[in-house]
Image (tube, rainbow, N blue to C red; front, side, top):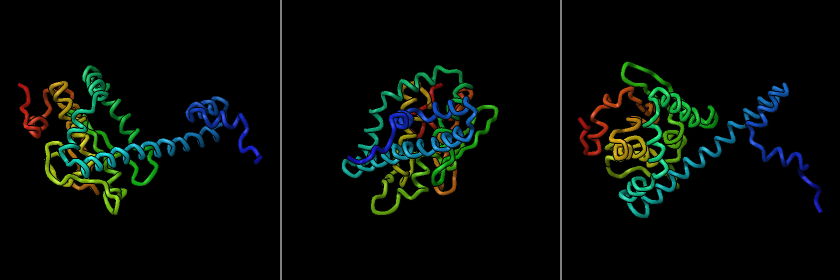
Length: 233
């Protein structure tokens, strides 16, 4: 029989949440261990985040290849029951609070600044809205900049212009979900877009931009019109 690799205590530690271990180290005054655990946790999230982002894009690419672009839209239009509940909750929140929650979302998508082309964003505010400019977006735009839309197993882009591809041909397949989650589905459920958005003009250089309007009545009509709809009076 080979020698044992780990003690029971070591195995228990491996199974415990990294953040719990880091907090305990800080409470014990062991800042060196706490810092090492925090740095390591960045890479734990990077692996999981990128696996899910690429997996989603690969699945949409498979649907497009086997069933066509209309099936890509159908799969996303009819399979967002979880998101409907979240949209309803977001719509009921104080609108200032949502800015803080959306910032937390994009911090999570930034993968803590590690990995190739880590996500980064800025936040600006004017009288009518708060604007998030991601450059790069920590999920879809990173897939583009990291080369996953090139080569033998390239992810798909749209062949035609659709309302769910921001009216553009050649839109990276992963990014099509933003039109459903940010705009067309919330219009169906709430009567208005959630995060009116604009994709990058140049995915290698330009930001992806999302807005959060202080008063939903100020959301421009274009975010209804791109889906052949009319903004309610």
